[in-house]
Image 1 (cartoon, helix red, strand yellow):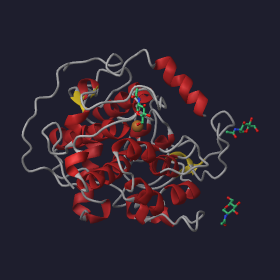
Image 2 (image 1 turned 60 degrees about the vertical axis):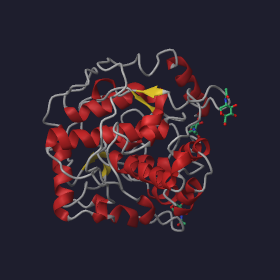
Image 3 (image 1 turned 180 degrees about the vertical axis):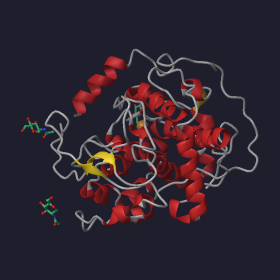
Image 4 (image 1 turned 120 degrees about the horizontal axis):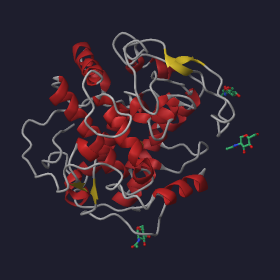
Amino acid sequence: MYSLKLLVSFCLASFSAAAALPQTATTSVAAASCVNPPKRQEWRQLSLQQRKSYIDAVLCLTKKAAKSGVAGAVHRYDDYVAVHSSQTPNIHWVGHFILWHRYFTATFEKALREDCGYTGGQPYWDWSLDAEPQNPNSTRVFDSDIFNPQTGFGGNGNKIKPTPEQNTFNITEGTGGGCVQTGPFVETNFIINLPTKGCLRRDFIPSIMNTFADPKLVANVMAQPDYTSWAKEVEGVPSFDVPDIHGSGHFGVGGVLGTAGNAANSPGEPIFYLHHGNLDHLFWQWQQKDLKTRLNQVGGPIVAFDYGGQNVTLDFTINLGKLAGEATLKSLLDTQGGTLCYTY
Ligand SMILES: *[C@@H]1O[C@H](CO)[C@@H](O)[C@H](O)[C@H]1NC(C)=O
Ligand SMILES: *[C@@H]1O[C@H](CO)[C@@H](O)[C@H](O)[C@H]1NC(C)=O
Ligand SMILES: *[C@@H]1O[C@H](CO)[C@@H](O)[C@H](O)[C@H]1NC(C)=O
Ligand SMILES: [Cu+2]
């Protein structure tokens, strides 16, 4: 797996993140002021009315025309799948992983507010509250409010056996794999057009969810002394034998066949934004412990897995194509610096 990913990243390294996408803004976003930042909360802290307004706003994005200009994107929700997918080899296992996903999630939050009338902050899902690492086969985590079919994101896909070609890691514990059967994101209500037109799929894997969302792993990430080690620890290593918290929401929910388990197209899973919202909340909490340093520190490789090679610096820029202007990592360290405007 390691060498395959390396190969993929080297093959694509000649296309820079910036060149891979059509651009409108080539200059940095002018630092605007941040007045009344939306406050982000854990899903369970939202009232039932707030939960409904969030989900309604997500569904609303599928009714608006795409503006990313990326091939395959039909509606505004597709835009986010398309942009993530087009930059996948350049934004994982790199120093800017957490800040790229911070910018991405904040831009999604902005679209919900500006295009779909949502007035709250991006919610997050603290899966460590649900995980039972001592009891990996427990399915209790999937009874969490977030999967409630009436007030949450609905449940599992129907059971499908993956082919050996689909199941390259020989994972045998998948419990779903087909289209989501309950809740607001069933096929009749929610269609994503990337990588091909189809339903949202889920493939719950209790053992991955319970062991990857272990509060002890969270504590280990939070104990890291500097940005470079924090950023490395949050992604861990690409192996199902070594749990990492970033993998929890992806492979616990998406498994082998589910949308969240697909490295490129995982933003097609609406829970993606609550999962990455949680990683961002952890990063924000970690920053709060030493703001003076942690609003001014980045590190880690520019090219995936290239530990020891060139590292990102504060003036390294990332972009989201036509969805948002280019931004420096420095500007993304502060959630209320103007490029970003939200709080926890
Ligand atoms: C969990 O389930 C797997 C089969 O899916 C089984 O092999 C394993 O022994 C179970 N573990 C526990 C702790 O019950
Ligand atoms: C999965 O199983 C196949 C066939 O037994 C084997 O060739 C392959 O190496 C296995 N993959 C992993 C990641 O263990
Ligand atoms: C990048 O950072 C790593 C970890 O801090 C360090 O070992 C490496 O030497 C740095 N690379 C360069 C080119 O300075
Ligand atoms: Cu990603």
